[in-house]
Image 1 (cartoon, rainbow, N blue to C red):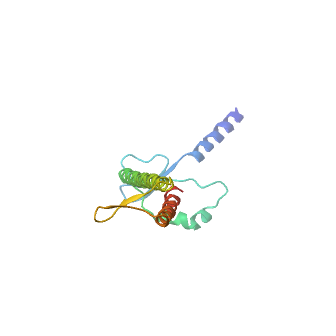
Image 2: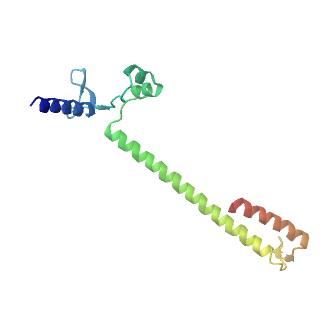
Image 3: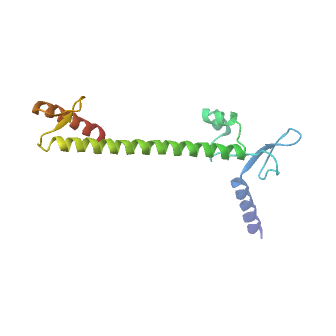
Amino acid sequence: MTKALVFAFSMTLAAAAGAQTYKWVDQDGKVRYGDVPPPGVNATRLKPLPRGSAPEAAASEPAAAAKKDAKPLTPEEAFRKRQEDASKDRDKQAQAEQQAQQKRQNCAQAQEALRSLETGQRIQRTDKQGERYYLEDAEIAKETARARQAVQQWCS
């Protein structure tokens, strides 16, 4: 019988140690603590201290002090913050995809220009007056070098 009582008592203590603790301010302005906050109050869930740590050590950490000073978000504020963060993430992802698509297009154009220059065929251009002219070997070599540079830039 006594073993059963000791076991039951130890299980109760273990459950209490693992329970969440909340902090809230009641109607009289007093700070209250408990494992179940009353309905309709703005309660803050407290994190239990890690095993083996002293309360002084936890409070002396700068991150813990910064979190202590921060005002807890209401559920509506937290929801709005998550929505804004998700929107920003979607915008960043869309912008990154657009940049990647532009890079793929530029790469394809640069590769096509290089292929046409390396065919060995005569290359013709149109001047400002609308007249056609053919590139000489030196001009083709310059444009081929520029096209290779563009392929390196956009396709790597």
